[in-house]
Image: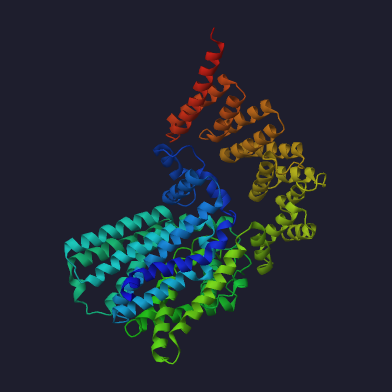
Length: 634
């Protein structure tokens, strides 16, 4: 019986761990989901549609085509129901867990830890369970847009498994090297196509090779195939990345213009952030966790805490290098964790703290803890074996509880605000929730927001949001318009205004003074045109058209659709909306004119939208045939 169950044990363990996340599948889209998921709303599943959606989303330097295609697959099979997207994330988490198990087996063999196959298997299963089940993973698995991080990690694990398995094989012939390199390169490419974190593969590969070499005599490095792989697959990419940063520093540093902190402050703060991540791993106290961790303090040069954190990391790295032969697992835990954070927790001008940045990095600590637990179990034989499952059961309970708090928009928002009352995003979310349902305390929270962001235009729009549930609530429209005319562009104000008018256009904010909101949209359009920002002007024009359509004024809507299209010569959405509006109203000539302009733009700019044009042309042709048949003499 044991022989039959042994091969199934990893699968059963993975399924048991995934069960803890099930309550969160009913949760809503969150935060950045709303900017990314609508990008996959395309026509039927065709090759042209796939090519279009793969590059439509401008997130990331490489546009993350593989992640976008996976979102599109969800859309084609289930529309915009979040449940299917979250279920897909959970399945990917399980696949990652399987690869964590396989990679752990190879790393243990590579480090010459746990000499027996049964011992390595037990430790690898423990590491996979810890990694899969930790409540920190909730904010990656149940946050749909973080599928990008999941897929990148999945293929990163696969690429490094190819490398570790080759190193353990001891066969450094060109043939065996070619097979290993093929898998390594293919999976690295897929990781990069999912998210730019795939660029970490060479650095993590360097960690594996360094620790493998430290436990062996130097003769294997004499193999030409291994030296070629080391140069082409590890050192060359790392040197190329360093050269790009050295030659084009503005490529990274230019992004700090939009941040309230500088490069030095970010580096110092990240030293403390990395210790904070480890604290969350070793002490999984749920109130410390959260999607919104923007309440984390920024550290400057005068902050002794940051310098102590830097010194502590220096000591940790020094100990890891010193003990690389005697305690290779300790060295692996430290070096893997830091290497996995080398992109998002160093110089890039990103926000300070996000839990999902640990998705790949936690493999190192999970393996270290599992090895330590196995060592302790051998020396504490008096403890019954079933007792070692208690920590995993505790993690299961914590993850189950946290997944439950992600199961509804209200519960999520209330929990985030309760745990992080000083987080601006959590505060704004709770204020918006109370405004939307007319709950008490909304006014107090909005006044607090206005004090925290005094002088920012978008805070005045909070009063307009209250009109959704309180028709007639006073709004200082004149002050908002004056701010928009005289102050620099407030991106949050633009987003808030477009969000409210979108809610109005779909019937979820009928109390809004639409004429006043429409005037602000027109003002935003004119200001964007003067500034030469065609894309922003296009968005303002689109939303002005939506408001006009909701008011039943289709001639005005058509005017604004055309203005939006004129503002952005490469824009297509306004023309598609115009064509469908005219088609539904039976104005075939106007619909055909919009389609003609779409065809011209597709040809001039090489836009992969032929399938969408063909679809609407088919509708127009069908309508014309129906009219001709109805008019024909009988």
